[in-house]
Length: 270
Length: 270
DNA sequence: TTATACTCGTGGTATAGACCACTTGTCTAA
DNA sequence: TTAGACAAGTGGTCTATACCACGAGTATAA
Image (cartoon, rainbow over all chains, first blue to last red; front, side, top):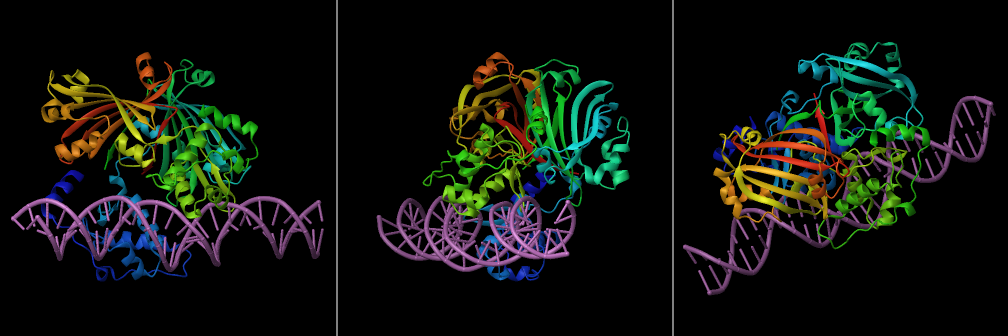
């Protein structure tokens, strides 16, 4: 529980402890390496936190000082720290210093995960199914090719399905995958099997990270027909770009959820 | 509609179109402003996308060119673009250019963690403000008292506000707090100050954990009026229950976001 | 016609230095 | 003892410059 952590700290650690450079001695960076300096430094600092050399509440050496020690410019060091700040491991405080904010948490403990439609419906005790509307390859438009980081004019597989729960239309999903890597997918029967399942079993890849955007829209006539509801009815539009564990882009997905049957829930902390 | 956009564009725009500087003429930045240059630029570019000057698939002017035009250094311009890339609005492609990957919407939520409206707008370089519609104590209805875990018939403070960004209505917020603990709040002036700020400074409590649900709805007439839009327009309804570090319930909040001005973005992993 | 090499423009990384806003601790004067 | 001024140190922003790796055309050679 993060709550207990916060409480504990307020009692025991009235004073934050500044970390000296000597306590971080084993920072080594490879000038000739292919991986950028700031990535190397970020990785090193991450490791220091994981290994416990840097602990919750510790104040990092100043940016100038640390940059000098590493023999990089302050801007480069800042780029490295930026990464850890984005990850929530460090917190910057102007005039004060940069402070270790979190011990490294396992990914499982991350508050929000994501699931495929199939997984999600099963988790809710509903019977998922699909009606495939389109399943073919086509030339990606500019947006999709940009999202999947494909060259212009590249082919993608389009999978357009109505997703049903207990036989009732719940969502309309358009899913785009790079043709080059997944062309064999076109042989599969997607009416029953989960896409994520096929990707895992037959392509040995698994969506691990995604960026999602959520917005509200009003359905147009064809969309409303597919979802068996009225034109102009509100719906959640979720746009998702997923990557696998090696950070390769897997799919871009746009899903319209009927607002009377679906809502999103998550926990967030700060 | 974003859904049809992708489809529509795939017919129209096989080739991406490079955007000339002249098409972005009204980029104005205030050198003397308090908000950092890169935040201003990010906000301007966001607006260009939202207004349709930059469209899905368009290739942005090169970083050097654009930086020159804005009379800022390339590094500063890059910091601005970084923001939009993080939000998923733009995609960088080395050797090719920076491409508009997502259209339509502008302001959006934080990746992970959560923020008050005030914090969120400031983070985007927008000026947040409020118009208080109601601020009083009342008997909680069943839903609210359940969310706050209060006995039936308990008193709560209701704060109903229109939230504005740069003077434009963005959201309609109803916020409920237990009267017993926060009755002193009724003396405060909430037109300018952030609620979270008051809670932290004067009640020594800080929302740390929240549960959120997100759904799409159509605005009814009074809501539409408050938000200065049309009845039936789609909106995101975000219901949030927050707790402090000691896991005590602080507030229940229902916020309606205009869908043409707001979307949420997050990263999820599993 | 086809393949190859080259060039140019793009974003990616890195540098050294500058000034600002903020916090904290210290020193000084009341 | 206390209140206030001050100095030093921190992160925040910005500049001007440099070189690299990659993509996409173009010119050239086969």
